[in-house]
Image (cartoon, rainbow, N blue to C red; front, side, top):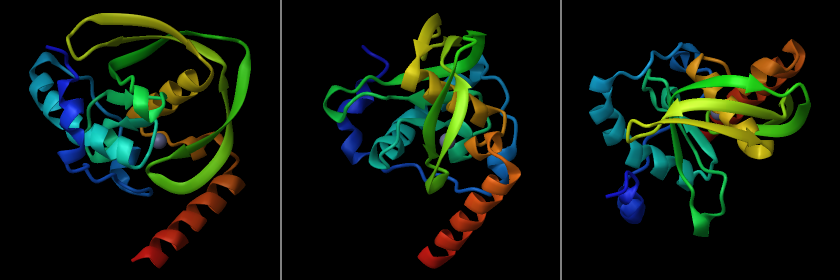
Length: 182
Ligand SMILES: [Zn+2]
């Protein structure tokens, strides 16, 4: 049995609501996942994947759905060839000196985008849903996405990488748009 069997019936799974900035939970530092958290973590995955794919988004961290644990989902593939990754207790082992600029968005800051500069490539170590330790070298979009999701585990949003002026501008625009939606 694969850990991702639930993906087959995902269309029937209600998406877990995603917290929108400036929700205070998005600013909290998540705690490491322990073995006794694994049942709750597995139970949260279908709703989280459903929310990420429905958005659509390429990453979703546990704090974005109000879960204060260090794990995140990532899938940068096309819809017809899904390649889900669950990173549990991820750590950056090393990063490239070479930096890359990429436009980022965030499901917790809908419709807001900005160029963010980060290491072009990273080596990341994490646990899988099956408990295996994995180490991977990633670059380009996947590296950006994983670094963005790992920031969420420390209460950091992509706008924190921008100038105060730019960050305030985006947060004001987001607040205005969210107000108009209600
Ligand atoms: Zn995000």
